[in-house]
Image (cartoon, rainbow, N blue to C red):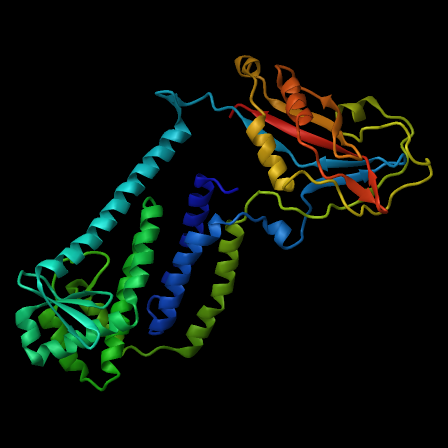
Length: 439
């Protein structure tokens, strides 16, 4: 399971990596449609991929969810599980809330305010359509403004001053320009950018992403006009006459004066195909790095590796202290050693659910908190042939009630699906390290 903070950190990091590649290698290219796809891919990657719970080692089959699996000469299979960390939440509290919870609450409140502000901006646009004269022409809805508003668009709605609309000389190309925004559905890109800002408002990169998306939309609209053999100097003059410094909102497109100089430059710029191909070679590396950054420590279900061990002569005291195989009375001939485990026991729902169960139920003992006790407890238990949990014991403990708490939770686990070997259920022992940490 991906926590809120994990998601936000991974999302911010992956977005930053990908946008820096765009900024360095693609921002000044005239491949406007490709840039649009790339920018939306960055937004969607940052919104969706960090939400997924996966481990890159498991995806690439680099490792098993188990630390190791040992089969001793008596036929008892012992699995060393990966460590689970139990943290104390008694520190950094304010008004009865932990510091982490306060940060989460502040984050959610700001996101809620931004979400409401976004809804308000959309409502204001539709209010303009209700209180002003409208006309539908060729699938576009024109809203005639009487106030000092510049021309702007939102989906297929074009907001334009009535006097300018009646002036056919200039309005034709302005309407055509806004029509490109509408036909290519540029407003959808802006809505995704706004959603990203609501979630990642603390990350300055997301504001640059929105700015780049809007800039690229204007380049696309200019290209759509000029491909119809419209004279470039005349079009530049048209933009200058109708550009404005008035902001119409982050979810609309308008003739912005601040972007005029760059738009003029991009209209006549020629791109190098070789440089574009070289830049394209960077993208797989960037997306792979971002994908690795979103890897989660969550454990996935996999078949564990099997290691056979020679019969031990005599256990030493050091072996008893460390997580070693738990020995049971001989159940199969001593000479028989399992070389292959056909099916390991499974906790209901899998290994990931096992760790969720342990993390939810193991509590940090108050005595250990008071005495500042922390460290690792090694628990050994056996999954019987019927799936019951038996022989729960501490291989090494730290006291302070931590040992007893570990035994309590492990002993109360629900029945597992038993392991099988050669079609028969077998007993399997597990070693579980539990780390108690006050930090």
